[in-house]
Image (cartoon, rainbow, N blue to C red; front, side, top):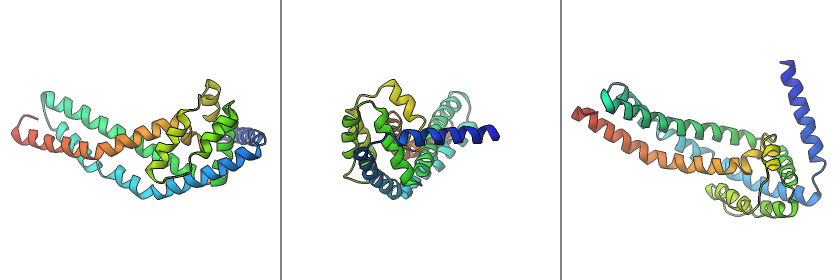
Length: 208
């Protein structure tokens, strides 16, 4: 426990040291971007919860029917059901981390400023950060991925932002994963319904 607190203290000191190197323009851009991000995440809290919950009954039904099936139907059902469950679990975990990341907007803004400084291309990256404003909801996540795509990220950037517990979810490479998970989870709703429907038909027909 003591070593964990010691590691946390060192991490906080490291963030504070890096924050001192952020220039005024970058800090202002980070604050404006944070306001948009925090608002978007809070607006999406309920819609993302619905997207997370909606496929769960159908995933459970598919797995239940697969467990009680025989032969190839059992294997296929379990593989498909577990794959859908994995997508849902990954989306739920990422959603929870992002919600925690925006609980302290000031700390998030500080970390975004640090992320820009770590890029080695401060002017270019800061310009990308200022382009985040505009749009809302899902568009902010897609816009985040879009504006960062024009900025070349180095290995130093990826390693550095990994130490920022809040900002790392809104910059490459994790922002790309977040958008991909969001899209996959949206598709999971109709897909899970269709899969469960065919699983029921297969069970009734005695071929599942």
